[in-house]
Image (tube, rainbow, N blue to C red):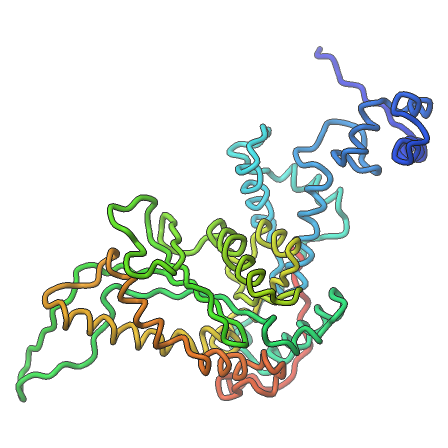
Amino acid sequence: MGKRNKFRNYALEDIKNAVQMVESKAMSIRSARQYNVPKTTIIDKLNGRSSIQARSGPSPVLFDSEEEMLVHWVIDMAKIGYGQTRQQLLYTVKTFLDHDGRKTPFKDNLPGKDWLYAFMKRHPEISTRTPQKLGKERAVISWQKIKWWFEDFAKYLTENYEEGINILKDASRIYNADESGFPQDPKSGKILAAKGSKNVYSTCSADKSQITVLACMSATAHYLPPMLVFPGERFRFNPLEGFTEAVLGRTKTGWMDSELFYTWVRDHFITAIKDRKVKLPVILLVDGHTSHISLETAQLCKSENVILYCLLEHASHILQPCDVTLFGPLKKHWRDSVRDYQFKNPGEFVTKGTFASVFKSALAKGTTVDVAIKGFRLTGLYPFSVESVDKSKVEPSEVFARAKPDQDLG
């Protein structure tokens, strides 16, 4: 029979007294042992590796401070309408452990049900709840849901920031970031041909791929250089040839992921607002895609005084400035720029190597002051007023008020 580990229980009051005496320098760690608390336990409490209230026994995979960070993230995401599921929580822990590199008992660093059960038991302030399932007619965006979002956003700012909703009175502190795909060979419009022709063809590229573009603008029309996200890790060409001001992004699929978005926020967004000396906190509005609301990005924004807040789900066409006024016209300018490139270079098509230079000309036409100001005004984000939102985009059958559904905390 194997030897069973023995763990002593120490009175919580003794632990508190020992730590307090050492912190106040009234006693050395050695002297504090008079409270019958081991030296290693006192050191763990002082270094934050274990909280004062932590139970004795085998060490958990995450430190108490790391678990608290997870708890705050779960609660914060629920507050802004993006409650995390159990699976999302477990994969968030896996991502954290993958980057940290510490040894764990989990296969592929993915915790199981036992860890989740113990975690939930240690943190009763969060609980799993079943989100309300909506029928097809209720999944449609209603005017009432939009009003709730505006009310919740104002409440969130009031409860969590000293300036409250006054932050929304400063257009220079409100930003929106979003991605959209730009095909290398966009659909051409109608072409001219002999009258009565039955079969008319237009030469096009066999490459159907597209480049993801991350755009970001403020309510004062401050545009950050776009990030162009290319598929792959290594290239035999210069992806930013002809547009060196742009930011290069690389992922396996060519789509935005949480790691790349974190890098963009850290190295480009935060740098840009600091260079412009924008008053903090700054609001960064994004949609609720998982790449935008990772634990790592949420923690970074919190530490840098950036208010990362999600727009109402399925309402980007109504509430997201980049969607409402930027991307539509920009894609038209993109098609025009591609046609212009092909006119000047007969027989050639836009490739990944020439994308940046062609896109630059389209961007110059599409990123105007009017586009940004109009985008924030039509979405009611600046000036902040739900009455400015275009009601014609809201489903007519959804104009009646309903009881507000509970938010999912997990």
